[in-house]
Amino acid sequence: MPETVTAPSDAAVVAPLSLWRRAMNLLVTFAAGASVILVLLPLGAVFGYLVYKGIGSINWAFLTQIPKPVGEAGGGMANAIAGTAFLLLIASSLGVPIGIGAGIYLAEYGRNRFGNLIRFTADVLNGVPSIIVGIVAYGLVVLSQGHFSALAGGVALAIMMIPTITRTTEEMLLLVPNTVREAAYGLGVSQWRTALSITLRTATSGVITGVMLAFARVAGETAPLLFTAFGNQYWNWKINQPTAALSLQIFTYAISPFDEWHRQAWAGALILIVLIVLSVSAVRIAASHGMLKGSN
Amino acid sequence: MPGPQPVAKPEVVANSKSQAEPLIKAGNSHIADRAFYVAMLCCGLCVLALVGLIVYELITKSSLSWHAFGSRFFFRSEWDPVNEQFGAFPFVYGTIVSSILALLLAVPLAIGVAVFITEMCPRWLKGPLAFTTELLAAIPSVIYGLWAIFVLVPLLRTYLEPFLARYFGWTSGITHRFGFQGPFEGPPFGIGMLAAGIILAIMVVPIISSITREVMTAVPQQQREAVLALGATRWEMIRTGVLRNARAGILGGVILGLGRALGETMAVTMVIGNRPEIAASLFAPGYTMASVIANEFSEATGDVYLSALVEVGLALFIVTIIVNILAQFLVWTVTRGTPARSHA
Image (cartoon, rainbow over all chains, first blue to last red; front, side, top):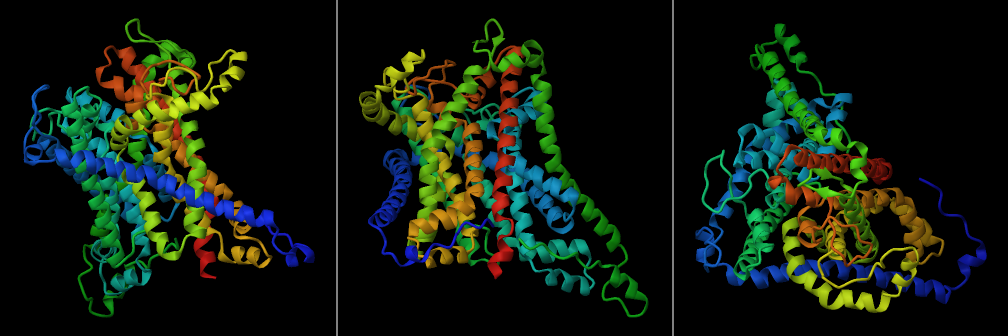
């Protein structure tokens, strides 16, 4: 810690605060408060507009029908909502086991050089722009299959989930006191059984927090889906066919020239944000009432 | 985070088997342990393999363009898919300008927010404020884009840009002397570099302010008390006692925000105008590296075209990785000793 404070002369200590110093203090307090308001303003504006523009367009048809052709009123985003759920299912079933496994490795066996390397790579992976992940999933899945598919989109989202899950899982497992592990070993429980049924079990709520954070992060991702899942105007339940996604649909509708589509874009955005905010808040509540507190 | 001590190995149990009756059969637990270790190691290797795969994919898929244009690729401003002539300079320019503009707007605000939350605001307001600012980070990029198209852009077109042109238009007098367009010159489209910069700023504020908060909290409380005891005002205490000690970490947060801004795709694509032109005016449309990939990748015909887009991606990847590593190192230099010190 650098030595920043030099002892002032006696005069400085007893002298009354100069007007300048008091004014400066007030000014900065004011500026800091103002910046909070300036930052909260767009947040309020985004949510306000989402509700204001979106709520009127959400109706039964929007939630149950697929898009109508251009020019026809009505129709909905049911296939996109289902598509997002489908993509998230694929992504979670690929990303969650690998992420948790890597987290267990780091926490239980990773106190060495190799562990540090993996830790570092996970952080690197976390910083990779999502559009790059899309290119890689395209090269891996789309090129080898020959067409866009739900699988490609799922793989792209899984790649984005893994580093978040890995790091939070590790962090949560390290919070489990070592005495718990030792107690298990002392009873003759094997190492793998301890890791799964004792350590991971104890850290469950923390690990779930990590998974949900990763989930919320990829739920609204659009860039990696543009040339993997690609979008679809119809229902799709096949893993090797292009599929619609809420975020893709919002993007397509937002940049379209049709008022009807703009209206539906707002409605879709409202549904997406409600989904994300619900999962994030659920995680917050779970974390604060759980056995172990989440990292944030 | 205090790491666990080396874990006692279960061999102890196996050794004591001969004397006392074992509680459970330790027979094949060694094999199971080994298998579990290998399975977990594989998951760990997956992370390593993924990054390797990204690098491999980007390098092999961009080689065609690399061989055709070499390093000139990043300095040419021609982007002509029909004649297969590609240069990435307009995208590099657009990425850098929009990111820097975003940081100029976001950094003072983010630090202000962090200072307010950690040092000034009443205790009961701390949690909710921190949560709300972090909520900004949870909003998907495409929703920011949607909001920007229908709310921010019209605002810029009708109010902010005419205002800037009117009161700061004189700056073009200076730049014209050097042969450039002024920063606030030209018709106010709304869509363009300024819109991209503002929406990026809104998106990076939560990142910068949460890191700044983290490093400011890492500054020991005694430091604050010492400065206050010397008769400093609150601002003087924050400046000399807190900000100065946390500056490396704050810089790390700013760089992390830069990394996010450089790679941000959807919101920027929706408002920047997507024209591969280089204009000094902030009102003019531009293009960024991420948005050219987003817009053109799925309809790129021809191997050279695709390869050129992947090369743009490779450059973006390398830059963001370097930026992120640098940022993490800076944050680490401030927060490394924290847990130990906070016990005191």
